[in-house]
Amino acid sequence: MKFIDEATIRVQAGNGGHGCLSFRREKYVERGGPDGGDGGHGGSVYLVADPSMNTLADFRVARRFRAESGRQGAGRNKTGRSGEDLDVMIPCGTVVHDVDTGELICDLTEPGQRQMVAEGGRGGLGNVRFKSSTNRAPRKTTNGTPGEGRHLALELKVLADVGLLGMPNAGKSTLITAMSQAKPRVADYPFTTLHPNLGVVRVGRLQSFVMADIPGLIEGASEGAGLGIQFLRHLQRTGLLLHLVDIAPIDGSNPADVVKAIAKELSNFSEDLAEKERWLVINKIDLLDEQERAAARDRLVDDLQWEGPVFEVSAATGEGTDVLAQAIARELEAD
Image (tube, rainbow, N blue to C red):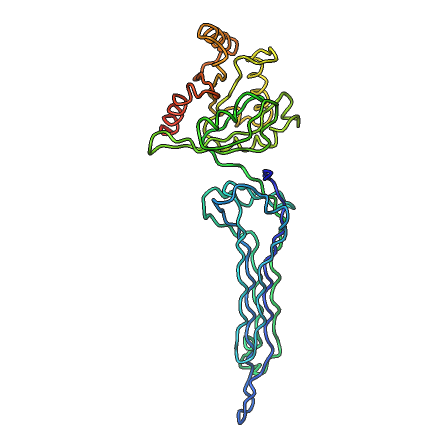
C-alpha cells in the first residue's frame, strides 16, 4: 500500500434538536399548561489515536465525517434524544491543523488519546421552560444550535526512536532489514524506498527500539528534488539520527561531500532537525580489506572534522550491526 502521510477531511458535529411547543391535554384536566420538552444535544466529533493504523490511506476515500444530530423535544415534558458522538480513528503521531485558520488543534502521540475537534449543537428549549406566574401558557420555544463544522489537515509524523538518513542506495533499507524484522523493498537502483519503513530492533530479551527508514535524500531535497523531502518531517520525532554513508561509492564520489550535502539539506529544512544528535555509520565495509577500510575511515573523519560517534557496519553481511544496536540501546536508555 502506498504510504499516505497527509490528508484533508471535513468534520461536522450534529445539530441540536428544536424545543417542542405543546400543552397538556387530558380528559377532565382544564388548562393543563405547557409541557413541551427540550431538544437533544448534537453529537460531537472526536479524533482518537489508534496504534493499529500506520498511514492516512483510509482518508483518500472517506473525507467527510458527520456526527448524529439531536432529536426534537416532545410533549409530556419529553426531552429529545441526544445524538451519538463520532470517533474518527487516526494513526498515532498525527498532527491536526484547522485548514481555514492555520491553528494547531492537537498532536496525538499516545495510543487512545482523544481530542474533540467539532462540538455538537445545544438542544433548544421547550415552551415549559418559559412558564412563569405571569405567563401561564407560553408559546415560545427556541431552536437547537448548529453543530460546529471544520476543515482539518492531518499530517502524520511516524514515531520512532532512531531515524536513518542518507543518499539513495546508501544501504538504509538493507540495514533496517539486517537489524529488525522489517521487510522493505531492496534493489540496486536509486529511490527503491518510496515510503517510510519502521522496524523494531531487539537488543537482548528486554530491550528494543523503533528504527525508521525514509526515502533517500539528494542535493536540493529541501527545494523539492527527489523523494525524501516530503518525509523529512518523520525524522523530527526521532531521538537519534544515524547518517549512513557508502564508504565505496560505485560512482567514485567523495563520501565526505555526500555527508556535507545531506547535512546542508537538513539545515535548510529545519534547524531543530539539523541540531539533533547524529551518528556517522560507515556502510559496505565488506567491499574493502582492513587496510583500505581504516584508511577510508580516517580520511572521511578528517575531511568532515567529525567529533561524534562513528560506527563501521556491513548491512549486507550483518558485520558491526550488533555493536551498533547495543550502543543505540545504551544511548536511549541513558536519555
